[in-house]
Length: 330
Length: 270
Image 1 (cartoon, one colour):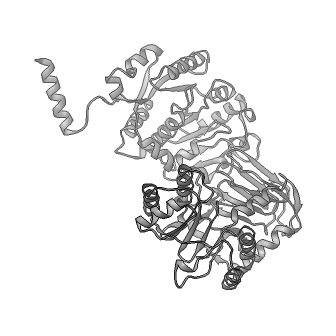
Image 2 (spheres, one colour):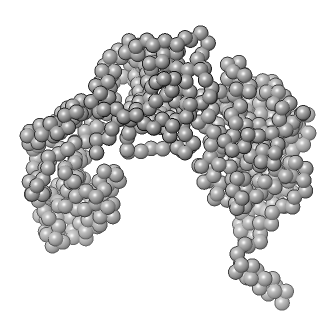
């Protein structure tokens, strides 16, 4: 099932659905996505025959989720007839994505070249996102395409716990950080330094070895409560780290998911180490000898899952742990 | 000063040992006594969550035993009450990381500077239980009015009686629902006491507030209005040796209900 964004519009492709139940199930799972709110939804229904009543309940479902049904695209005559009698616009979504649109989208968000490039590739491969001229007379080009799930799959084919050179990952993140224009989060509000002071393990000394030179442990699974990963180099986790889990790395920690447990970067004293996550919700952040706890106002003891990711990066600055927030695109 | 070491145990899981530990500990600390709570449920720790202290834990009981830190460093002070502190269990280790002698020596050290040391025991009767009981001289057996929980409590009482160090044990009946007792669907308090023949230290009514208090990390004793909170405060007073009558859970609270009740009594007389 594919879905994509247009200017204040949202195409939901349900043409793969074999029956109404499946269709409604898929639709409601997409509609739960917070980005669908207040959007003009365009439904691609395929060859499925829908009665008036069924179409009406689909419309009601969309409206109940605070969105609006703009038009439908269908191959079935019956569905078309039901739509016409209900006053729902029937239109077509073209199958090919015009190259000019992709280009203009890339131009529009020059600063985010790294992200957009990847996403455009996905768009071109799948031909999933379309804009139709009839949709809106001053229809704007696609802003972004959601191909993130596909990227996930590509990476998940990597072997579990494979050790790879650090440069591969570092380069991308640095580029991303620069292009996004980092802003400083209000440090006081999210994390509070513990007065534990410097608590480096015995024999460890403060150092500033470049973490790019360290090997990286690649882990492709969700860390659950009670599970610990420790490694003398960098750790990259594709998945969430649940509260109660612990990640201890000699270098950087990167979580491609929600970080909810304890993360200790630079555990052997490397003060240049960073902790980064798509959602930085760690109960405790430790970098080298500095320990910080999550503010009590943010203290959510149960596992908090989210679809809204706010990538953040924590590092040491002037003897404090500082968190940088990546600006959101919208 | 020599404090009292009380273990809170049950045998069966999910009857409210940890909730009881957190609430009695908080209530005693509020009454002005110095209290340390020890979580001995290694690998499945929860007490820190109930107290909302998870983000403050740096060292655990295993760090103390393996001498990575001093005992004082591992004690996490409560957010509100400086009289209360927590010695957390290690989440990433299992019960075999600790043995009974080590726990006993920790309890012995802690009771010298505190009025109360409350040990939250894990479910089961294996090493975790043996560890938790090792340093204690008193025990509170938590149970619910269900056959399975009572059977396990009976087993635990048997094990406690066999231990010389345990000089007294008392029963705390948790999650009591007066409406179910009335309709004969739940064992009454008297039934449970009779089956277990064990003195009672408290009756805690079922309270949905417990769920929210657990999720918020705020023990229910801090909620003056909650009935379960009041019941736990009474338990703390009884532990301190005061005579407090048990809460009358049967009495309906609302004005209309009282009138109805009066009518019902009148009818019964006629």
